[in-house]
Image 1: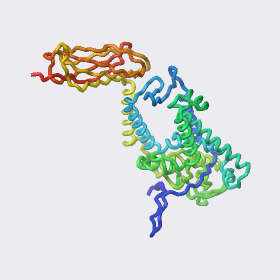
Image 2: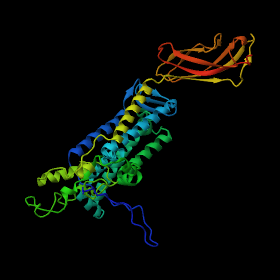
Image 3: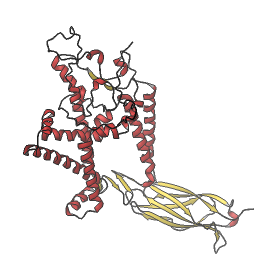
Image 4: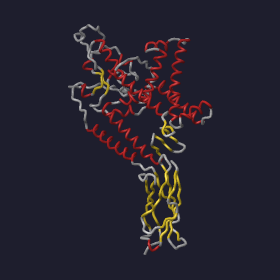
Length: 471
């Protein structure tokens, strides 16, 4: 029979008698060792790009304003050349659904690479771990420092580490708030003490949240708080790329000299150096098999490959591979579920792009007066409406308002209105018609609005014209 990947059982044993089971184990501090390798370089490159995107975008300008700005008081959301309003909330829902399906697709294909390379929790945690190494030394030095009694040297190193953590947290909090309150105005107002109280609160909140999550909670967020770790098992199949140890090649484990004939001693390629455990940010032993704590960062792959190089063995004892590959079977790259997610993603992204590029830059809503109809001085049947017009463009425009649907309908009110960028207008309109020209007592009509400067900016809204019963 083909050998299967061992899966670590994390279910606690059943309680005996009156014993209770604690589902949450107290945290044991993880001391990670520094390492180098291909996947570390990929993670550094990806992290640098995400940092540049997050910290850099907030400083970009577009038409004399911040390029990306969520203006909550005015309910305007600026993303470079586009302005979105609460009425465009459906687009946000679409975007979140697309992101969810994208996550499902990448998980089925390559496991938890999102967690290992691009999740903010992981990216900030790696930065905080680097600060730890710079201020307190590598793994063994940090372990000795924590066990040592308090001294001036220990106090200085600990203070430097926490100062760096708080500084990164502060910059993170300032940047986040800067997306909601223009950062070029936010910083001077915070320093001068003239900023709104909520600005100080949210900067402080996100500073402490970053400090706590990346500095103290770390892997606890991934193991206990993040739901992704819990539902990932239903996304995986035996063709999913996961970080795995090859037991057929590695067992039996044991130390040996580099020049020894370890095969004759019944040993595998694993020298039991535990380097894969020492570099793991969640503190697991990948040799125990697939575990929900594994975030797919491939730190153990880099560490193991370095040891294999030193020993003169082939790389890949720990690698990105599949269950089928480990058991000697063929890996099926294209399978129905992966193809289904891919097709769904393509369809949703196409529809989302079409919706964004074809959304109207003028919003029209028509409110009919509560009085169904009335008779005016000419003896005509008259209905009263309020046309709500929102200019969603980023420039002032003149709009032409017209009505169609009934022949002979007379329009009283402004036909042309000027609306500033982002302005909402309420235009009263009276429509009237001779009673004998009414086709029925309830008639469908259409209000049309079009920008004179750009005829492609148009929209319409339907309503009803009510009259007396027609015999």
